[in-house]
Image 1 (cartoon, rainbow, N blue to C red):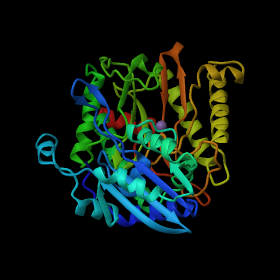
Image 2: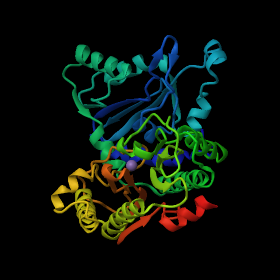
Image 3: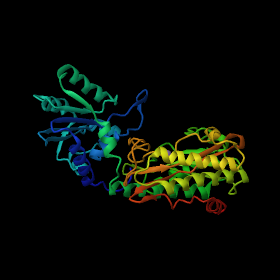
Image 4: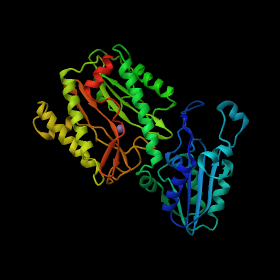
Length: 413
Ligand SMILES: [Mn+2]
């Protein structure tokens, strides 16, 4: 858990925007979810549904939010949370009190989860509007609710929540941008600590532990996704998960790391030579990727499509690889350019916003061109997070050392 105090106004504003999008006669039920079983009696760590979090700021399992809107007015806004039970708390720690749940979310009507069934039956009595659900969500509580609807209220129209959230979460609030700046700042500290402390002979997971240590010491317990440290030829696996190899002298190391701060994510990649000195070929690929990035930074502004940013980067990469003699015609770039350049970033690392939508001021996307040349045993991406502004973009992660020379100096110490 990070230590920043949550602000109920943030979630109140999010709820208002959300409620404005709902049909005038509607019911909406959103669940936080439950932890998945790992094996025997062990569970995976719990992670609350991001749409639920967006509306409540609550991270606790077994919670639900019920909204009833009639003739355009909110008649019910109830947050259900698990009842504190001394026996379960002895094993698993303290649950949210009603008062704390209310203080975090800004919701006054707090009920216990045991009452959810009765609350839903109550709001559905004589109801004939639209029921909003996460139709693609397979958590047990969602299936349970769908069954009630099918059996008892087959006439009620159901509508999917995702498209509403996808629109709402596209434009980041000032609060969200502030939280992302903080996530990025801590990510930068973690990356710099790796630059300064990594040595040939270490294993990849030991480099990841340096990052995790810096997170913890900065009050951020949680990376925003599984840390990637890929040395040598492991750049071939884009979401390389093992982290078990020894980092050898002469290896390039690819980091793809992020931090979650008050729910908001960063997502940054850097690549560097563990010895502190790029080889000629490593530097050539590095500079080519940097050129793609600069082209994207120049180009990103309101009105642009992510696929246009991608085309520009792919074209730049093709020009670079032709100049380096790796390819002879632009079409062959597909062998070395393996992934798209951008995705939206927010409460989810790959935020639920459509990649097809036209960029607008207030959106935050990644810029992460990558060029991978297995024949040279070198491949890398460089990833920064940018805020789309009225007339261009602001690189939120500009302070994290990125130029080849700066990185060499940091590693040499
Ligand atoms: Mn990314």
